[in-house]
Structure formats: C-alpha cells, structure tokens
Length: 535
Image 1 (cartoon, one colour):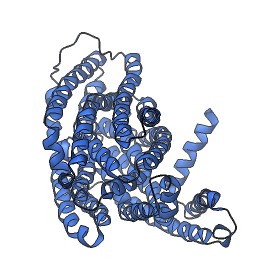
Image 2 (tube, helix red, strand yellow):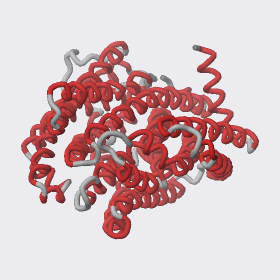
Image 3 (cartoon, one colour):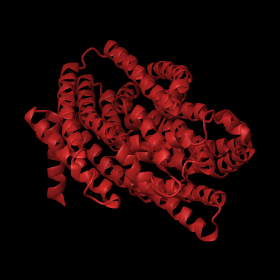
Image 4 (tube, helix red, strand yellow):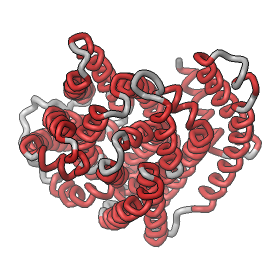
C-alpha cells in the first residue's frame, strides 16, 4: 500500500466492484444455507412459543455483535488501521491489529459475564410482552444466557474480518457465516434424535450457535497468520493508535447499527402483540437480508477500505467518485431485487417456510411483514454506503445524529402503526425510519462534500427503476399463466413457477438495462466474464 494508490479512482472503482463480487458470491452461499436453516427452524418450531423465545434471545447477542463488533469497532478500526498501514510501517500495523484483538477479547468477555448475570433484566426490557407467559419468559432467559458467549467469538470474528479486508482478503471473512448455518442445522437435527420436545430442540439450537461462533473464529486465524498477524505473538493490549479508535468507537455504536436497533425495537413492540408476531417479523427480515447481505452489505464492506485509503491520502475527488460508483452499483442491484420480492413475496414465503408447524396463516402473515420491510430495501442498502463515507472521513457525529432521529422515528411510527397493521406496521415503521435516516444523511453529506456528482447516481437510479417496472410486468404475467394454476401438481407448481419467473425477470431486466445503457450493467457483466475466464 502506498500513497500513489489513492489517486487512482478508476482503479479503486474496479477494486470495489471486484471485492463486492467476491463478498457477494460468498454471501450468496451463506444466505442459501441460511434459508435452509430457516426452513428447518420453521418446520420444527413454526411460529409458536419456542420460536418466539429463541428469536428474541438470539437478537440480544446478535445486536451486541453489530454494536461492538462489525457495527462499531470494525468500522472505527479500519480507517485508523489503514492510516498506519498506508504509511508503510507494516510491523507497527501488525502490533496494532494484535493489540486490538486481545483488548477486544477482554472487553467482550467482561460484557458477556455481565450479560449472563443480567439476562432476566435484559429479556424483560427487550420482550416485556413475554411476561404474561412465565414459561416463554423463563425459556427466553435460559436461551439468552446460553448464547451470550457467542458474542465473544463473533465480535472477535468481526474485527478479524475488518483487518483482512484492509489487507485485501475478502473471501474467508465472507464465507465464515456458512459455518454458523451448518452448525445450527446440525444442532437441530442432532437434538431431535434425542427428544421430540421443542424446548430441548431449542436448547440444542442454542448450542449450535456457540459451536458456529467457535468455527467462524477458527477459520480466520490461518489467514491472519499468513499476513503475519498472530494471536499468540507477545504484544500488549494497548497501542497508541487505539486512542484514535476509541474516539471513533462510541459514536459509531448507534450510527452503524441503526437498522439492527430498529429491528430490535420492532421485536420489543411485537412481543406485545399476538403470539407468533416476533417470528413473522424474523422470517420476513431473513428474506430481506438476502439481497441486503449479498449486495448492500457486500458493496459497503468492499468500499470502506477504498474510501479510507483515499481519505487518508487526501484524495477527496477520488473519494467522491468511489462513493458515487458504490451508490449507483448498490441501487442498480437492490431496486430490481426489491421489486422482485414485492411481486413474488407470497409464493417465495410459501415455498421456503410453509411445511410442518408453519401453516398457511403463518405464510400469509409473514408475507405481509415482508411487503412492508422490502419497501425500505433500497434505503437500508444505501444508508450503509453513506455511513461508510462519514466514517472514512472520521466524522462520527453526523451518523449518530441521524441514527438517533431514525430510532426515535421508528419507535413513534411503530407504536402508531401497530394498532391498524399489527406486526406489519412495525415492519413499515422500520422501512420509513430508514428512509428518514438516508434523507438526512444525504442532505448533510451534500453540505459537507459538495463535489460529489449526484446526477449520474440519479440518472442510473431512474433507468434502473424503469427496467425494474418492465421486469415486474413480465413476472406478473408469468405468474398468472393458466399452467401454474391448473395443470401442474401442487408439489412442483411453486418451485417451477418461481424458477421460471425469476429467470425470466433476470433476463428481461438484463435486456432492459443494456437497452437503457445503464453503465453498472457493463461493470457487473465485466466482473462476471473475468471471473468465468479465471475458472
């Protein structure tokens, strides 16, 4: 890494696109297994008491992972680590990385011990509605205590991912969640061999989470060692550069994890509604996480090291160009994904989850939540890109301010909309709050960096919307063909219809994107062709 690199915006854009592709492919594999996992959970647990208890319990360490792991420490650490590395002092950068990892282990261990002791208070705060069912409350507390140590492993994994991303390694960090999904699936089936009790299976699933966390951390260590970063190296817990990380850390807790905090607010309010409401929101959110994780998070993860290099080198014109490229790319992919999920939400939910304990009513109510969540997909994805710019510039105040407004908006809208729309109102509140967050951040970024070229982003976005509308019309027509309503047996109707509809939608969108001359289409296809030529 050297200062010359930061003056090559075209090179940075290609690197961002390539890195996003690697992360996206790895995340696709992980998300696929994640859906297999959720299909297993839906089949074994449905949307009943154990499902609500596990989902609420798992949200607590998962939120803390977002806050203290990839949501704050990783984002606060990357710009500082990049600055040390870009100066060419490799040994100093390694000392910083090892010290940060050891310090994080100590901090997370303390938080975990406190969390285990305070689990009853935490659960009563997060899911107050569970108090009316003592059995559900007791199970949620037990599961929370069992899964709290997951925070130690996954928080450390998140920092490892940030270090490896700065060093140009994206594949291993992105593929790590596959191990968690495999571990959870195996745990459910393993527990089922010993007992038919859903409670026992739920406890087994919590054990699978812990094993998955250990496996994810173990995967990162050889790749860190290959770059000269070894846990076992003698090093203190403190490095002078950690002071800069500390200055950035606390504000990023809210700024980076606003989506997860809003989801947690939804869980809190959903616990006051009918049984199953927490589960409906969870399954719908999992479907939204598919394009959000593969595309939105992939681009955001890929772009932060590039933005940090450009900010550290004072290349603000290059930074603005990289940001515009990332925004156009994420909107080009998430807008058609959003439209596709809206059109196909009912058959997709039915195909993935409707079996065993997950009945038609659960499908209908999950589909309703999915509709309201997916309306905000473009905003969820875009916020991650804008946040990356502020953090690359070491501006933590702005994301905190907008995140605070967003969380307050979500809470108020959730309480207002949950009366007429039940759990669907909570999903809609999350989407609207994210749109408010994005609007505020874009306005403030424009004031901070007037040199950003918004016109190409807007033109690309409008063209993408036009191509997505054409795609939606074709997909709707395909779903209404008589062959899918009368001729095919029920067991194969849904999968065949969805495969044909998605394949046709992708083909139509591709033709429309090429005809409308959307530049991101050429970039994505170029990445695909280069990947195929190397294989």
